[in-house]
Each structure stands twice: as C-alpha cells, then as structure tokens.
Amino acid sequence: MRIHLHVPSEARQHVLLDALTERLRRTFARFSNRIARIDVTVTDENGPRGGVDQQCRVCVLLPGIGEIAATAKDENLWAAAAQATRRARRNVLTRLKRPQSQRERSRSRRRGGGDLALLEPLESGCSGS
Image (cartoon, rainbow, N blue to C red):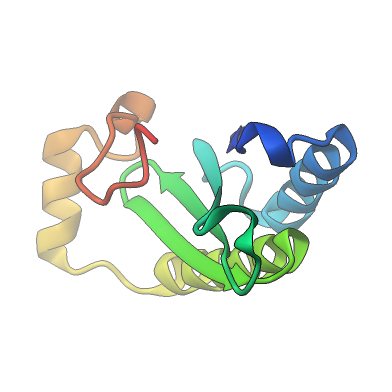
C-alpha cells in the first residue's frame, strides 16, 4: 500500500504530514493487502479568507475493483482529513463486501483479474492531481 500526499506548500508541516500518513496506515491496515495506492489531496478553496474551505479528497485504488473516492470540507484541515478518511474506509468496506455479479467477474478476468497491472488512472478524477 503506497500513500501519496498532495498538500499545498503553506500547509506542509512535517507533523501534520506524518500524523496524516500514520492515520491512513492505521485506518486502512485491515485492507492493506488489497490496496495498491492511496492518494490524498488537500486544497484551500478560497485562500487566506477563512471559512469552511479546507477540502480533503482521499482516493483508494483497489486492483480489480477500481478507485474509490471520498471528499470532506471543514474549517480545520485535520478535521477534513479525518472525515474524508472515515468516509473512504466506509466506502472501501462496502465495496469489498458487495458480491460481484457473474458479469463483473468475467470482465475482471479478461482485464487481468486482481493483478497490479490495473494501476492506470481511471476516469474518476482521483489520479493525476
């Protein structure tokens, strides 16, 4: 499981980045063998004006399943990251528990199954940020 953080320069504090990385590792530890990559993008939507403008987007890449994304906004960067992480974990859990139809299984096998060859960015807008 690889974790990539995309954080603007004004929010780059080593303590925050380390804490966020550790939180992601702990939150997704149960699924670490199923997750290829986690991308976290943090943005400040309206700059120094304040308000509910800190946005955090967590994208989880599951080979054979695709990308799962969750977004949260808050005044506090840490609160937005925590909320987006919780949402992403819930979405991953739901997706992994969902039974695959026969049609989805056959498509997955044709594309290479659960192979890590599916690391190409999808159309969801998560990758390439």
